Amino acid sequence: MKYPVLILLLISQCLFLPVVMAADETDAARSEASFPQPHQTYFFLGDHAAINTPGELENPVADFALGLGLAYSPQDYLDLRFDILIVGTEYDTPASVSGGPFTLVSDDMTLTTFGFSLMPLLKQSVADMEFYAGAGLGLFLSKLILRASTFGLYGTHEERSQDIGFQLVAGAGVQLSTAFIAVEFRRLNLKANLAPVTSSGNYDIGGDMLLFIYRLGF
Image (cartoon, one colour):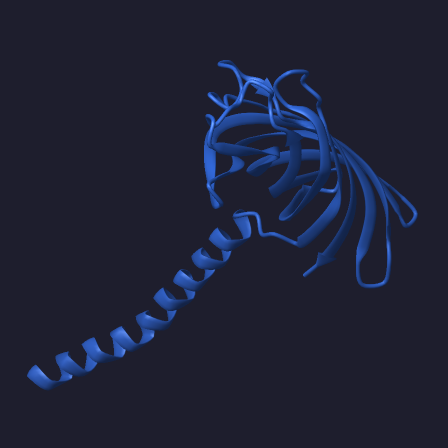
């Protein structure tokens, strides 16, 4: 009786194993399907019109904005974006900044902001055109660099700030054969404390952006 029982156990295991494996594969497929998958990646580049703050962050020039992101579409009318934004601006150095009698301070200073945002967008398609609008909240890391020289030796002074920012977004684009291109307007509401280069307190380092968007599906 010993061997027939072993044979029956082996047969039952062989029959039961494929059922367990199939169930595991089904559960994995359901889990993957229930988790939203990115269906588009996008890149953008454009102009940033920074806000002018007299006496603190004056005469912004050489502004730019660029970035990339992933887009999810849980519904036909809704996109969820995970967005990375980089903004650069040059300002006049405040007149209150001084390096002493032997130090020459540069006339301008550079502010770079790097941010991560989550943005839900409502969209409407009309033929090959798409119109969309939304808003997003994110974390932004800013670095202000001030250059100076002492007896011909050059150096820099940095101020950093981490802040929560808010974006408003609106755009329109057209679907081509392999890609989607759009023009997008953004308003970045962001304040940072960059003292002692600026006076103590939070100053607006956001502004308006006009961006060219290139989006690919996969």
